[in-house]
Length: 264
Image (cartoon, rainbow, N blue to C red):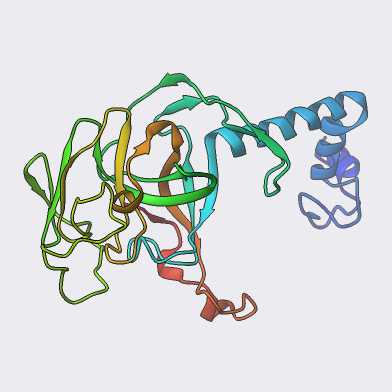
């Protein structure tokens, strides 16, 4: 019986040719593919497989590449991380079209069902409230109904001090004095990036900041983020490459210590 199977699947009885042999349709892999995807039923199965891949890519998980320094050192330029698009539940798409191109159209997004709401500490990706095509990554600091205040770089939410993220950083050695008012701060008159508020977050929105507190364009400057703009939550760094280094020099390009690293 075994000899008959070998004759059917393999040309040689002496060695296994591999699941997909280079010489074609006698190997087990090619036999399986021909049975699954051959003929008219095979075309239907291919279509179902493509639709499944598209659904997983568009509705469940996708990848996001970090290009800015605003989340250092939690996320570095060149990090590519996995985004969980159903972390908070299922929503209808807000854009339908061909990925990576401007071909498509916008549409209103609605909850099909919600698992949980965004929480302080979550790192999220979202569409900027002022520009639908700009996608940012930041950390949620406060949610609807909470009050945020910053005093000499010390963050407080509802009057309680919040410890900084473990890998957050400041680019400048000293905070801005409390009497300095930055003109582009939101809302007007709220102070500056190091001495801010107090400001209450409206319900249905969140307040976000970058972990690189001195080099982040965030809610301190453009305001509150509507929850429906959130696209997903960061999960894990998939791969990380040093910017400006060619992939031909893999040992220099790849940051091995960051590959498959969970994001907190």
